[in-house]
Length: 315
Image 1: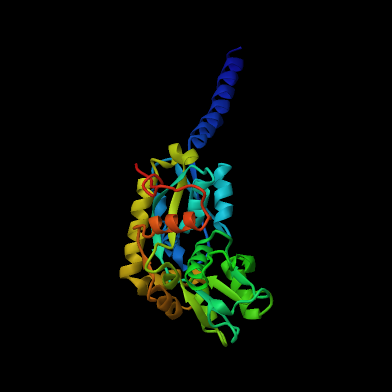
Image 2: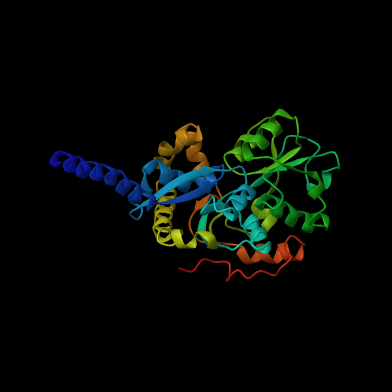
């Protein structure tokens, strides 16, 4: 009887131990962070290479996801599968206009953007004909809205080129342009921009700053109201780490190029040239939010006159 009682006690202890472990594990919080392609996301690559997020608040695990465009991020956030995303300002505004409850918590980068072609007959926007095709990440992307800004100024109609658009990721758009298979021009960002300009007959039709009329933030960080409760303790930590990564990229480009060359599959010297290119700057300031809102509303890409103040995250 005594042995039987002892066995029962031991059995109870063993069954309790796994349950305790499972409970502790279930209390961990997983933060899903979405990024896209290109050097504009270099601060996030620095975070990953240095393991900077390992010091996140206790019980927080970070999982990175890479998507082809901002629509995928918006849909995943709406479904509760992502918590933080990085994208251009226009896709964020379109989501807010359609009822997406999310906010900007900071900038990530400024970058040279450009519309590139390798067709000699294309020299200005006036040269595009109905048979031409322009590749960009998606309708409503920052590249699309910049093209629309230029079309309004040069052609008198912001939407006149919309029928020529082809949705392709930056890598696919570059391959399509260089192989002369699907597209006539590609509105893109580094490193794809520089690779296309260095290709035979590659030339720039339009720069991002020319289209916008000045500097603007290329990539911003956003989070949704649905994720607010679990993201709130983590976000100040993430913002601090991003700021540190931006300072590192701006002040130590040689060291950054050495660190990130394998991630971008580029030689160190080439990556250093890209990181220090004119118009490239990493930082958390958000520039151009009001200008994008005003243009997109006037051009019909937004139905509501959104407020930049209301769209910014306040801890």
